[in-house]
Length: 523
Image 1 (tube, helix red, strand yellow):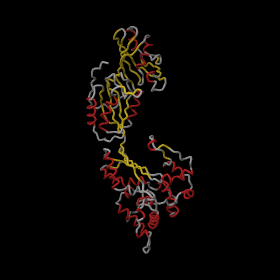
Image 2 (cartoon, one colour):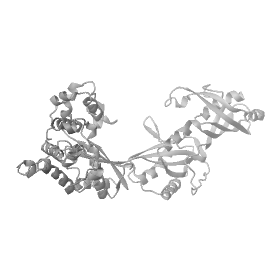
Image 3 (cartoon, helix red, strand yellow):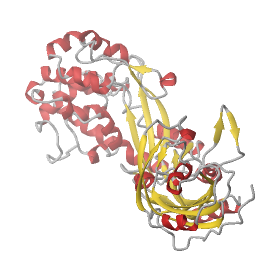
Image 4 (cartoon, one colour):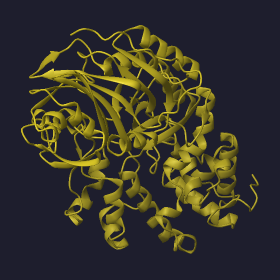
């Protein structure tokens, strides 16, 4: 088979290539690993029909065998290749078949995933690094002129070749395109039972480098691993070739067993954003649990996220917002920006109209909250939300009480105060969940309207992160100055509403539904 000299290989002398191919066949390499070690780097060549690849390798074998030579390679050149490959451990053999791809599809269908594209992520046994290094050293001994200056990184990786060869075929089975930027990831974790044993000699040579590390945060389930790609490659770069040869067989031995594969499928997180209003003074923002006991029947998070979960079918969700209001505080105006991170969503194909319908479903389910501008956003948008927690301006309306009758003149003087800097120690009521610290905040503007001798409305525009209740009553002197010191009489707060959060996010939808606050519930 003439592939032309434009294809990249380590040598263009067919006789020498044939001799190298014979060496690789006798060492137990599969066809794709033979191509890898010949230096073939063209993804298109690996995608050729299997009969073309066999014909190419066979032509190389014949070019190195004399016509009258009765050799195993000439009589049955691929007989030895039927065993598990000494290099890929069967990954490019048994796990490169249509039957294996059908197994992947069945799992995705069984778990109910939606997808239009996919990417495959492979985890290869660490001992494959040693086996490839062993084979390269062997080739340097047997074919020095070709491999003397070659490094392990010059050999196309098992992962890359698997993707080049199988990506398009798997795409046909899944009826989806193979896309390196896809959010739908097929995770193939290949394991070989002898991997740690084969790597064991490295622990004797460099014990300080091989420290057990957690395989994942959930290490109780997954355990620990000693040998990783990073530390094995690090040690290989420091071991002289003669030392490696004395510790590891060159060429590597034929494996007794083939790799097994654990298939797992996941989708990158999706993000749903919007703004919510809260009209109840009995509703917490997130589930409220005290000493293991639930307080309140539901929460803002649950009212919003339950319908979202029903639609997207995620494994879990994470709710975040630009700040938070207390249970007894209403969120009015245009609402509080929020974002819901959907972890491993199984359903992902939705239009903006679907989200508008979802918004209507949330709003029809309760009078306690309303949602607007519900839409999909990118992960980067989560940073906008974080910035809004401390850097934006928020407006409040409070109903306050004074111990003594307050003169109208004193209330009017409050409107003259601008950009008042206050020092707030962590409020006593949140010390159980916030570290003790003193935070400087700014009251940009304020104005007061008398209700009667002992009550007035206080309208404030403040830096985000300001504790309004503590600014009114002083929190036993932990917030200074405060309304008690400004009016020179004891003050307390009876009701508080958030009127606006000046964060222009997420974008306002032109066809978004207007939300109208119901009458406040009497509590």
